[in-house]
Image 1 (tube, helix red, strand yellow):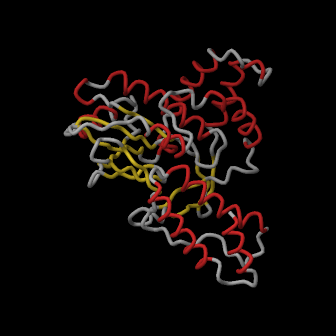
Image 2 (cartoon, rainbow, N blue to C red):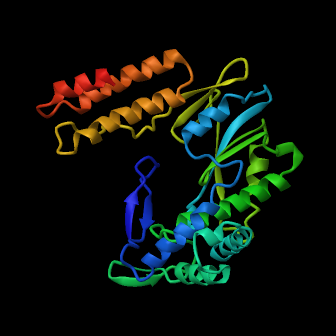
Length: 308
């Protein structure tokens, strides 16, 4: 096991990862992930990325007595109740009419293999071998699927059973990050409610309220207009440094240009207003010039930027 720092979090918390590649269960886990993957993202509340969020925001209107909040699961993978997640997967597989097109295995075979794979997570840390007794290992190909499918089930239950006074008007989720639109004063009630859905009490949500009519979600910043509509900006964490890919490096040219295309695509796909796009475009050009100063080909890079 090794740890990576969460540099955008206070205190630089560590994220534990199990180096699953080459382990005895890796190939089986990889094959099972291919079988189970089509079951994920069937929820109407699921977001594929921030572009989908931008499209959803076009029709959202916020009333004076409403506010945006976001919820985030504390350590989703390592707190996912395995046997409950396996039960959710069993039910999904039983109802999957296209399963036979992906595999010759029966549902029973798949479940036996899944149970085996998720309960044999061993890792070494500082010379001592451990077995993970609860939750899914970060690093296993099937872990994101288990976590996603369990959260989809929890989400469905939470929305269906939410008390009327704190029932969200809007609910969209990307993995374990949830954006909701609720009545003002109901943040604590909603948080307490969704924290009671998991029968093992391991899945817990923290929340963030909008501030000055703004709230960050994914890589976007949602800003409430006076008329109740919502505009979007690109959100930059405090840890952002404007450093991308050094143009003087030995990376292929198409990789370097892809960085620029990606940043521009995000700008034009997410940012709502033209003035904000122009400001972001100017900022990207300045960042690109600074980030690519070293190296002999800076001039051609700037020409490419203009062409893009």
